[in-house]
Image (cartoon, rainbow, N blue to C red):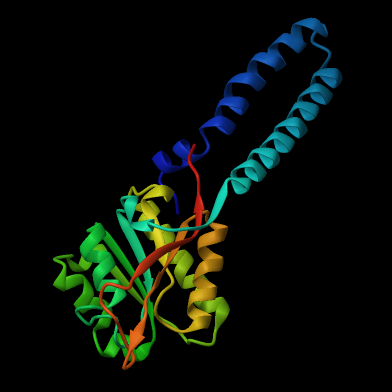
Amino acid sequence: MYTVANFVKNKWLEIAIVAVAIQLITNAFSIFLGNNPLLIFLTALGLILVIVLVTIILDAMRRSRRIIGVENALEKGRKGVIFTIGLKSNEVNSPAMKIVDKLKPQYLGFIGTEKTIEANIGKTIAETNGIKSEYFREKSVDPTNVKEIKEDADHLIQWMLANGLSKEDIVVDLTSGTAIMSVASYIAADENKIDTQYIYSDYRDNKPVDGTQKVLTISSYATK
């Protein structure tokens, strides 16, 4: 759930319209219409419909500002990173370790499987980078269950928002884990208007070649 501060921050325009504009307009119409209850009711109903329409348009405008496929994703500071992870995600040169070392986020979320939980993959990534247990969470999922993965990714996003992070503070990294885990996590991120990224790398002997990595923005929601 959002905190009150986050709700106000993300919905300030709608709140201003409802709390201020509607009250003023309704009062004006009340005087103009001679306090006719029916006319005042119909006027208020019409204004509510206008607000709903404006909200839909604003939401569409925000979606239209989504940017696809930009490089240099690490240039933007992040306080929270959610990873899909595999059994090698805690290795020194793994994409996850490089991302955490570069961004130094306050919060981490991990979407893995029972095997990654048993192998302490997420825990190792967090502890290696000095992140305490209350600042990271791990989710064990069935790697073929799209709905479960999406719900767990959404839970991690809401957890970070509830702890005071803004949507711009959070990114979902889709590099590791299974393809289904990445797709389901992307769906959750997109519905919440959270940025997503992917680390491209050349591989040799099934290991990433150091120095060949490119951090790509899959989708990003512009704030200006």
